[in-house]
Image (cartoon, rainbow, N blue to C red; front, top):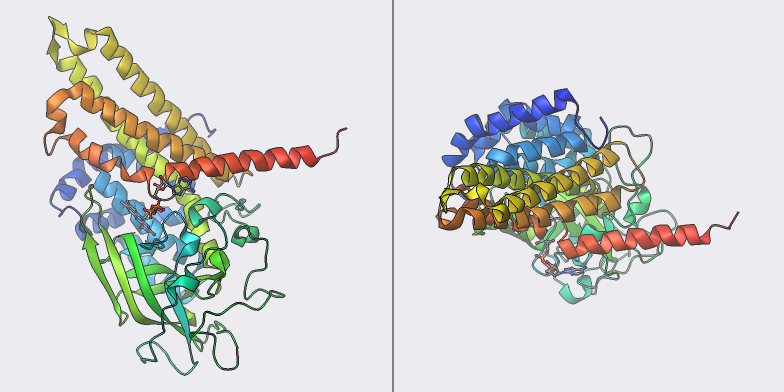
Length: 473
Ligand SMILES: Cc1cc2nc3c(=O)[nH]c(=O)nc-3n(C[C@H](O)[C@H](O)[C@H](O)COP(=O)(O)OP(=O)(O)OC[C@H]3O[C@@H](n4cnc5c(N)ncnc54)[C@H](O)[C@@H]3O)c2cc1C
């Protein structure tokens, strides 16, 4: 496969997925409740083997699945993507015990995960997250209530860098070479938050700066996450706009273990939904997407719940987002294609001015423009996914371009499709009314369009500066 064309087997697979989405998943999704996790739909995706494929294949397969399902069933597409987004950190950074406990159930569609990074005051600037992980004395464990940690919002909210995980997921990240799996695309350098300082907890790093009133303990020792579960923390704070919350069975939670350290003071935890002190509220969104807010009131976690290493949780987030960013573009391409197909059919059938709508040259040219832009976005998505799978050097730029172009294109195409359908497209329940609501959020989540432009520019100037430093032959 090149970045420019799929091979016959891939094309056949995509056609099968589109048929599956239309004939089997769409009827199931219609029985679900908008804005709620549809467990029957997730279980069906598991039974079809699509979820397990998320963990055994690369970025291109992920994109093909998302694009193909989105064509006829955005609910199935989103449910599949969220199984991957929430569980990918466990797949790539979990211990054997964490993986054995959760991944088979996620793949079967019987356990629902969620990726909990965003907070009310930290969205694009995710490095400013304040959900506090306050260290406990070693004797405490899950279920044993220690003193609730105090909040130190102002200190913790300090972000030493304007970078965000959405941005730094591209900025310092380079695909690792030689992994071959395409699933481990970030070098250790990706943990750099751009401040140029050391990573707390890493050998030779400077002493971390504890927040007043909730420091590391009387002897100044930091909690050391050991796999025997000796160290523990209490999580206190909020997460917001979390897909699958509050109904998920477990959450990948990014929390601040080192106050004032920005991206370098974040740890990823696997938090089962039944931990004491964890509550949530569903949020009613424009699209029928299950999204909620989470409240953490001294939720106990131990070293056994850490994903990856303490204070290196940003790497976990970046690994996940590097993989998923182009696939958001694939979701958008699937929606654009559905809108385009509907428009070709409608303009063919609709009588107008003694002929059909498609006989009007302005209409035909509009349809041509929709097709042109959709195909351009598709190629960009495939190229970015292929670059990821091949551990290419320019993944961050390509992924940002693909997500930006595809999501903005889908918005344009769906809007033009509504226009060419007239009033019927605005009636509740029409495909285009549904797509019009669905197409908006991907321009905001996993890095807003403006953030993607920032990544692209930064990568261009980085390449320019690197070239400029090279001596002339
Ligand atoms: C449907 C949906 C599902 C979501 N699911 C999840 C989830 O599962 N997990 C999760 O952690 N989060 C999730 N989110 C949250 C999402 O990631 C955030 O909304 C996103 O990161 C933007 O943060 P914000 O909404 O706080 O906007 P802000 O960060 O406040 O940004 C608002 C706007 O400011 C502008 N802006 C921001 N930064 C820059 C910049 N650097 N340069 C130029 N302009 C900028 C952009 O126009 C941006 O849209 C979801 C959101 C939605 C809508």
